[in-house]
Image (cartoon, rainbow, N blue to C red):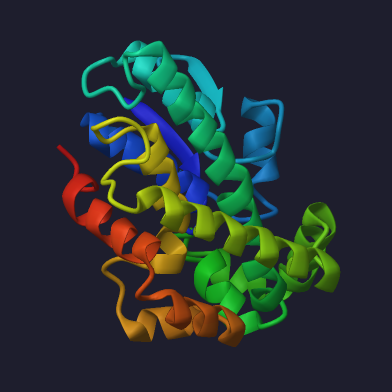
Length: 246
């Protein structure tokens, strides 16, 4: 069985969970604690990031690389279009949303969330081992400082990230005008990537109470202003139709 090493709260890990579920592949999950995850990932892969999957001795790191691997090894229900031109277009969209939505949303969100200890622990410890909360009561300030330093989070980078994020959302709205899918006429890795990376923001299926517990004020305000935008409705529709496991 495939083992997924992840942070439950990570939208890049949600991208891989959706990938596995879409293909109907059974998998087990190892939820890691930020900071302490380095002891685990350091033994598995060259970089510290998750998601990582282990499949019959094969170790694959990174959501895009995992998607490539799963389409090659488990070709039923492919997410990469068969037509080479459409395949490259889908990969280009995936790279774009990884960089302009996944990374920018994360940095901008963390800028507001990490200083709020209660808010931060609500998402950082989601799905974490039982010892996560008592341990983070002691080590959270160090974890927060490491995250801020590693990702270069400050007022200037957060403002730039927000601008890039909103520009990417504008592009999504433009492309989705009159279209159901980003590439071709069927669901692909482009759609999965965009929707998974926007899932913590659009929060399909989550209650207002859940959102309020983990969303800092500025994030809630922008999200509320976006609720009627085409991209927002599209993400929720794609989740309703394509997120359920086979």
